[in-house]
Length: 194
Figure 1 (cartoon, one colour):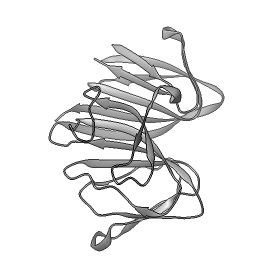
Figure 2 (cartoon, rainbow, N blue to C red):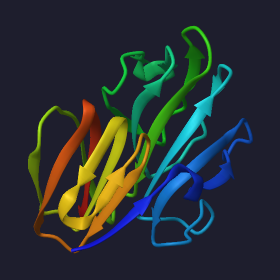
Figure 3 (cartoon, helix red, strand yellow):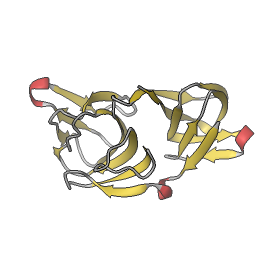
Figure 4 (cartoon, helix red, strand yellow):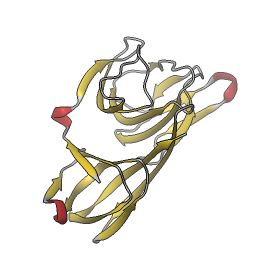
């Protein structure tokens, strides 16, 4: 297995497609891909400071997780609406859908995974880590995002702080994880060729 730890300071700050804000890009495949060139998948997080429209991403599938703040309601017009107000509960929707976000109280932070379903299959889960655990890695790429707390990987000599990302490629294999004091919460994303 190959791995890479990505700290918040190592992300790439980029403008939103609609110009309404900025997003911190954690990882993208292929490396260096942009919204203009297209990508198989992209993980980013955004500070949502005001209510307003989402950028549209035709042909892409989107996953969102609330990381901090009171969240927002997303209105999909004729397709209904959904509340992203409970922290760390993923939602999934089509990037084709027009969407308008209305903040519940104030600014918030989300984690956003976008995939091109023609070339990539994605699965996302959020789980608490309260004691040491061995995590089986079988996907082509696994992303582990530390949403809360800290995590150690003793076998690799790694310590992942809050909002650090671990990218693991070329499984299968096992990851021995140990939570820091008070435990941790991880967002796991498995990415495989379609």
